[in-house]
Length: 281
Image 1 (cartoon, one colour):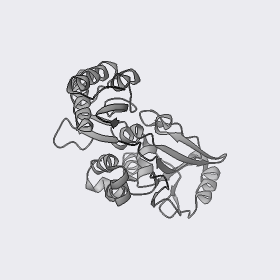
Image 2 (image 1 turned 135 degrees about the vertical axis):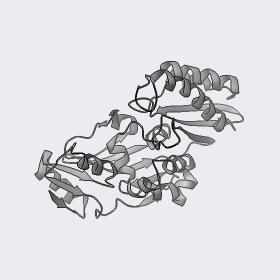
Image 3 (image 1 turned 90 degrees about the horizontal axis):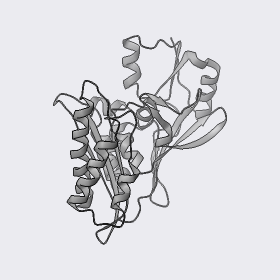
């Protein structure tokens, strides 16, 4: 197996164009290493992004948003002062990914590009209206997290494309956000259900609400008709329960070793309610 270590995005793209389907991109490697070890994949070449310039920084934007390089370790994103200041709920979501070994090795971009349905950050990024910057043979393009993630372990990335940055816009005035992770076993690092919520509150009245359920379904799932119930209303416990029950009914829950679809729907009803109560204070 050949091992390539480009130093620029253009050099990495050129390698991918030349090597084609025989190459795999290596960021943190926490998922790819397992697949290689179990012989689920057998590429002829690895293209490592560890030396690519500009992919390991966290920067603030003039309007109060964030730009995270794809190769920023998840632990570094969780602890970074800018992330903790401008998007504390996102810092929390990064801080509960896997375990400490995974968080120190896995990367922000690799986490999204793998599209693991049981991962924590995608749901939180979805409700924060985050976008990803993608570079490829045809130039650069930008996708929302919802557009990027199209199924379990499936993304909208085209052959030869690289996810280079994650962009989180400035929070709306009065925005409060929360992420809740439920695991079905104490020894389990991966979520059975993850719920992200973000509400813009003004004078106790909800001006906008975004809720995404992850880990229980193939991609982070929102239910716009349930979110609309909160607009113009105080986010009371009764309303939170009504919205949570609507999510439990609407989400197409999965069956796997972490929980049955029936069990997950019951957990969704509880965790959506708790997330809404948290953002309502």
